[in-house]
Amino acid sequence: MPARRPFVFGNWKMNGLGSDALALAAALKAEGRPAEGTLAVFPPFTQIAVVAQHLEGSGILVGAQDCHEAAKGAYTGSISAGMVADAGATAVLLGHSERRHGLGETDSQVRAKAEAALAAGLDTLVICIGETEAEYLDKATLQVLDRQIEGSIPAGIDVERLVVAYEPVWAIGTGRTPTIEEIGQVHAHLRQKLVAHLDGDGSTVPIQYGGSVKGSNAGSILAVPDVDGALVGGASLDPAEFTKIFTAGGGRFAASGS
Ligand code: PGA
Image (cartoon, rainbow, N blue to C red; front, side, top):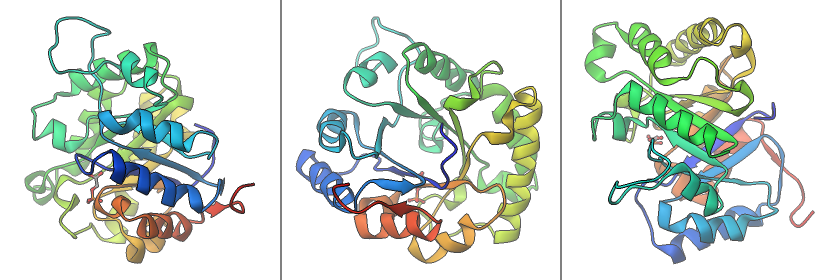
């Protein structure tokens, strides 16, 4: 990724139809081209092509919410990394907690998906990690994150293509967040861990915080050292709220149409 902070990415999850996606994309495009920072949206698979076409030239990246680890084959209902690239996506979310915990996705599967995404030529891989509430209460957060980094991120990955999203499972969609101090401690640890895991190359990898980020808390969260951006779920479905998060983190738009 080019070093253009903040990195504010919207995960639309399984919401909306094509017309909703287009309206959302049009509202974001109307703000103008991101002049400072990096904006990306992750629509459902069926909306990638239409959103990518609409946002072409806008400077807003479009990604998929997942991909399969195999390049092709007898995997009914699955979508490969090559297919999402073919639809116009240049990014992919991998290992989101709703897949890890809802669908039993393992670290090694996430790593295999990352290898597949790299091989398919996707530019940006957002690898998600995060502890459950039980692990948080057990004070096992850092241990869990270390294990997920070791297991999910290919050690030889081109760091220019990597973004790491730290999302405490218990903060996703709940309106609850860790304290600013806790976020700072975790991100400082993640920075060190990424540097060690990626043989010294992890110092520039963007680390996003995710989990109940909204316009009203984005400024304080994005001001924390080593918080390079936000992965936003619910609030990314509201274009005004999403752009508020981006601008609260120091993101700027060039004049519309420029
Ligand atoms: P939320 O979701 O912003 O709705 O909490 C974040 C995410 O799942 O990425």
